[in-house]
Image (cartoon, rainbow, N blue to C red; front, side, top):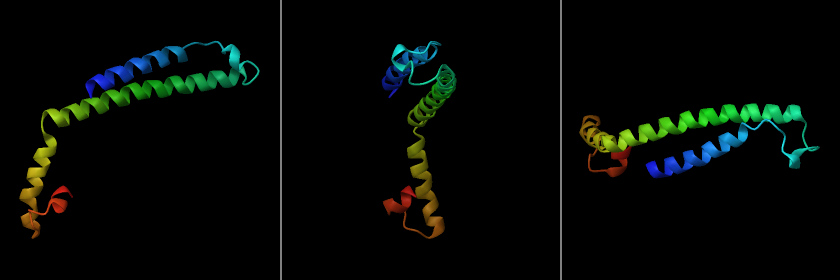
Length: 97
């Protein structure tokens, strides 16, 4: 999971560096205007910044859940809580809800 995050971050950093180029690529000359290119570039840079923050927070939360065994803690707590509702604690479907 962390290796995948590092690899994807490396690729995203390369793309982010490409987005910082301010000149219109020759292949796009005549297809879109410089103004539209600047708007697209500004939006893409903003989106890229948000993506870095989002991915970092996601990997942090996922790692915390795995490291502290939070899912198994919830599973155990739901097994304790089901009899209070008058439900069968052996039913795995109810356990997961």
